[in-house]
Length: 161
Image (cartoon, rainbow, N blue to C red; front, side, top):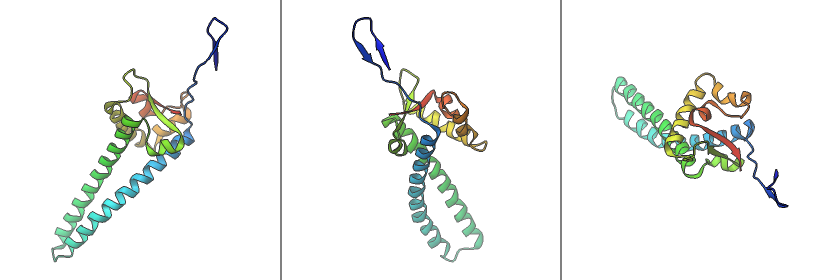
């Protein structure tokens, strides 16, 4: 887009292009696959310890409690690693590995830019967006600005660039 500034010079003004749903979906899928493999390695390592402990001649109830405790720790690990990955990558770089591969990045409408607080709020919004059958993510298809519920909550948008 060009703008004439009153003189005979024409200045180029960069145009922000909102990232499409397909690019966002692919970026999120890449990030989830990366997190899945990381958590699979961690759960395999800790799961082997659980198997070793459970075969040590304990009662059935003790083994069930051991397995239940491992599953709770695994769930907490998934939440914590997801939170750290998305919050820190967005706050530090403005994009995750998936977004970088897809050529998109996160922007804030705030003058303060992307901070850890805004990125954490956005991550919490992921949960709200996912709960009703991922409708909050699909909202980007209906929204004129292509923003999801977690984008609206945190005051962010995803753009190409």
